[in-house]
Image (cartoon, rainbow, N blue to C red):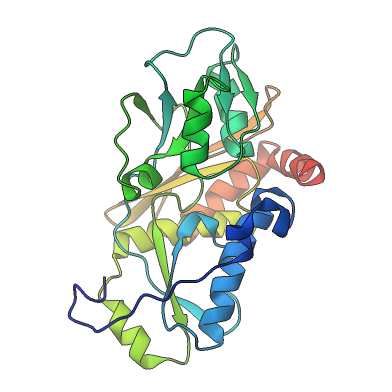
Length: 277
């Protein structure tokens, strides 16, 4: 991004504990993602790098001291896709995912399938699909596109079937808060509507005390001066709390969505998910 804008930049490779494998990181998806994010942030604070680019859905609800999100570029496709070998997912098929959010939503619209834990990077998961270990995968459309993959059978899952993770499809550009040069260099990449959507979804996570490993789906859409939020917390056993609200501004929409989820019983479901993760 910086090179394209005429700003000299150098890519700094960072090997994190997450790259070394799940065994080197805290247990669970949140632990692995936290390891990736945490080590990159430490490099930023140490001055080893001046700009960090994250998948927004992997970030915690609060920024670490000394770090700010300088830009949220225009959001890519926020949807998930169902990837299969031949375009079909028969009764009793096995769907692989390590995401509790995806697991609990898959069984809402396909109660006949079996969802099994499947970890690894995208290439590993696609190999398991080809080998017949699973019959389907649920992957982020933006991740597939950024890897340049062309998959023969990838069915977009509309919001009615699968609400994405908060921040899914967006990038978050972090810099040190006391680095005016980096702030100026990255400011031009900020896309106001994408930032509003990201901050709205992040505020829902913050209000619920959730994290990226819990079964929360949320999608915010900027509609002129108003913001619409659709959100869901499900337990995978038939219980769910949902919200579909439109308010004047992201903060109001996030507050209304969080209130609706809590009123629908999201608190106990999230607490149970924390206890089992």
